Length: 87
Image 1 (cartoon, one colour):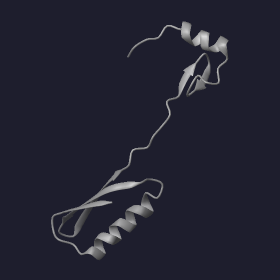
Image 2 (image 1 turned 180 degrees about the horizontal axis):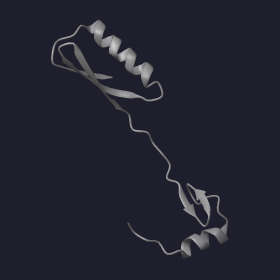
Image 3 (image 1 turned 120 degrees about the horizontal axis):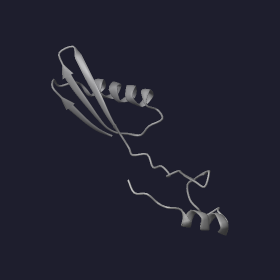
C-alpha cells in the first residue's frame, strides 16, 4: 500500500495505526493507497481502493442473464431479432 503524508511529519508508528484502522474499517476492500493530511490536531484520511471486476447483467426476453451461453437456439434467435437501441 502506498502512503502519502501531507502536512506535518508523523511517526511510522502513527502511520501504522492509520493503516490498521483502514484495514479494519474497510476489511472487505483492497486498499491500494492512503493519504494522511495533517492540520494541527486534525487528521484527514483518504483511501483509494482496487477496482472490483463485475459481470454485466442484462434483462433479455424476461430473464436476467450475464451471457447467452445457456440459451437454447430459440432464445438466441429471439435475442438476435430484437431491436437494439443505442444510448
